[in-house]
Length: 125
Image 1 (cartoon, rainbow, N blue to C red):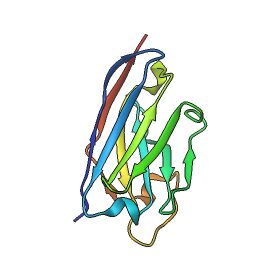
Image 2 (tube, one colour; image 1 turned 90 degrees about the vertical axis):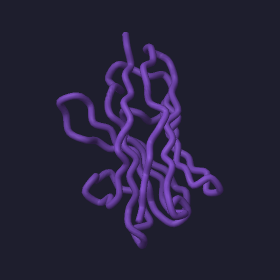
Image 3 (cartoon, one colour; image 1 turned 180 degrees about the vertical axis):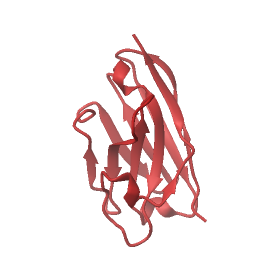
Image 4 (cartoon, rainbow, N blue to C red; image 1 turned 135 degrees about the vertical axis):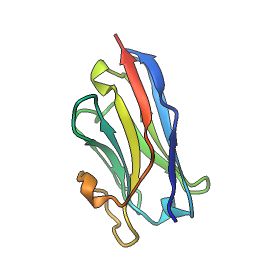
């Protein structure tokens, strides 16, 4: 059974940084495409960043150049380094994984099969 547990959220001032981590069960980080999504208050869930099974990465336009997705296969974790945070980055952030065989990241949340419980990020101005 795949389990994803996010951590690292919190309250930060505009321009600050946070690092989110997603701890995955069962060695899935090395063989599944994974992504980070977020859901701002009152809005739909949206794609933030993705990493393929081979390590290729992609980003939403709104975060490109500020956020970095990475993975540590030995620790079975996927991280999201967030710099130069803005108030519009305030959201619940979710880690997600695609099923085995789906090796590429995608911006569509419906293409991910496993989700964490989310972690709140609040950027104050």
